[in-house]
Length: 414
Ligand SMILES: [Zn+2]
Image 1 (tube, rainbow, N blue to C red):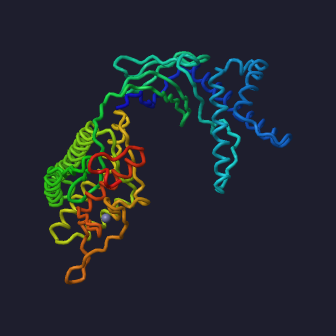
Image 2: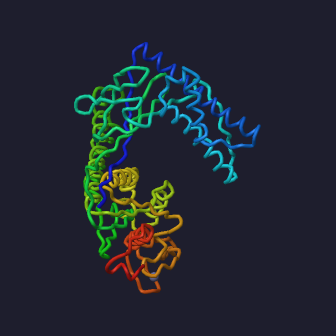
Image 3: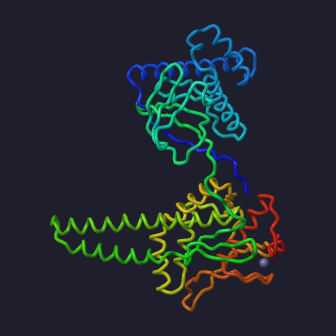
């Protein structure tokens, strides 16, 4: 298990005095002029000498500029380098787009009101941040400007590394990069994950076992409560006190459902990350979610369809939120998080034993209605539930991709 520091960004709002605000605007102007001058220099070097200037060339010239122009001499040297580096990045993506044959979009001169800000590379060189009590708010000292009160909060304390100052909609903001010690620990298992309809998720483990995260029962309970509260609301006379009361009840149930869902997702994602050192999941695009919704509509039996509809309604935003939680918790714990490109890998159409790909052919009932294929049956002899097979395909793909050998029983499938 790796315990490398994790990089985190924390945003603060600045509350400068009137004179500090004027100094901030001056500094913004200096960086803007530096950016435009460096762009002009690159264009001229190309026109006159067919020479592509590098960021390194320009940083060397910056030293001369700082020696000859006292306004720039007052600018923090590293901070000026950050601005030159931003121009370098603009050119790098311009060349990348050219190479790919996309609309190139040559780097543009920036007007003062379109210039977003500047950055610092090292804590203690040009800026210093002192957090307030309990890691809330604090003070930011910028050389040439002074000490500015800031508001914001770092959820995880860490060592301040870099700082970016941004001017947006008349306000001033600082984005600090912190190196945080991971507060979370992973485990040793590797799992593949597939989203289900009947279950919240199916997990394939490295030792060839399967498990599932069940849909919590309270979803159904909250749904029933919500329905009766909504019917109640519909029966109340318009603009009556009782109606207002009923409406408050409906929104209270909504709030409670949201809170419970978040709580469920937090608990499950924390438990999952604590057990593993690798998680493989299909990438969750909107398309995938639509596909699984279509899958439910194909489900046989009215009861099943109703239940699936219920799950779909309440869980509609859950997979995305769950994956986001798993991802950031995995980062905190140093756990590998692999998103399997499902469009390419096609986990639900690929056999986890022999690798053969086959479009699932839906069976049809007596009336010709398509039934969903819940079983994976392959000519190689493998019979699994479709979700289990897909979860295992995700796991195998991620193991191969991260250079880890499948162990135990999975080795035969590699
Ligand atoms: Zn097979």
